[in-house]
Length: 331
Image 1 (cartoon, rainbow, N blue to C red):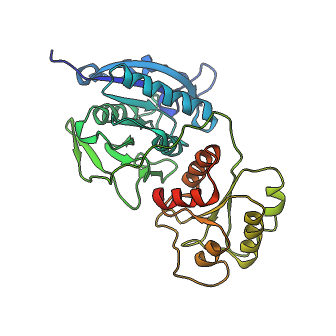
Image 2: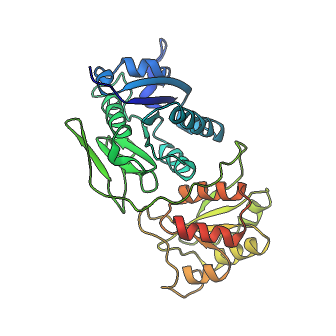
Image 3: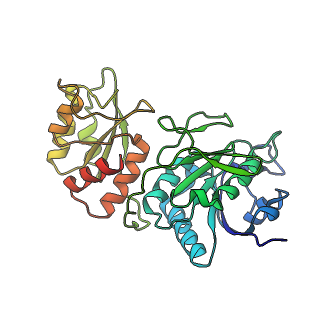
């Protein structure tokens, strides 16, 4: 047999590792990393896989501690000679973990995250095929330097662009403004888009949490609760705004007061695609008005991803002007 490339697999839990219990048909995380590998015939023909169970959680239970432990695992595996990394993860927060790791990943080797929408006990479980696609992506020389990737339904997506778009569909992961950068078919990874040069990684934050809530504004929403929310000691605020970054004049007034008090306030579009603008509209509460009041536009980042970038920047001690610069570069 020819030499097989080495891949380190870290299992974090999620539907891909869930099975029913003896007393209930409802599934919970139970399968180890070794179990996942053993359940997929043919993986050993693709790569030499070193499987490690890092945690076994439903993804809403993931914390910064688990995510940063996965980062440490991936770095150590690359230092030990792995060609690429695969992490298995629950889909509910997969896009968030992928984006956070992408901000911090400082290696050229691919770090690929995958999971499943159907548990192993369901008909047509998608976990095995997703795992095979992720392994192939991790060893693909054409994906070196692309950062953190998401492999799902034989598509490969950039962590920066991908989002979970459907609560149950097997093709839930999409990149609305980009599309997948590669596809997997007949054992081959075909790259269709060459992403722009990656930006320098940001400093790794400590595992301690910071409080950065996301609030959504819309019709007849004046934001009267915002002062009370800020008084709870939050570290920053993300506003999921309408359209290209709009809110009511009353909500804009409250946000301006928070900025004047030293709180970073970032507005992102809640539409699911597109970006915040900078100078198209000029009425009170428009994007131009919000920027003039000291708020920061998130560009093409979703509210969830804007929150994670803000988390890293707050921990790094960046000033408001520095944060604005990072959002201009990364959004």
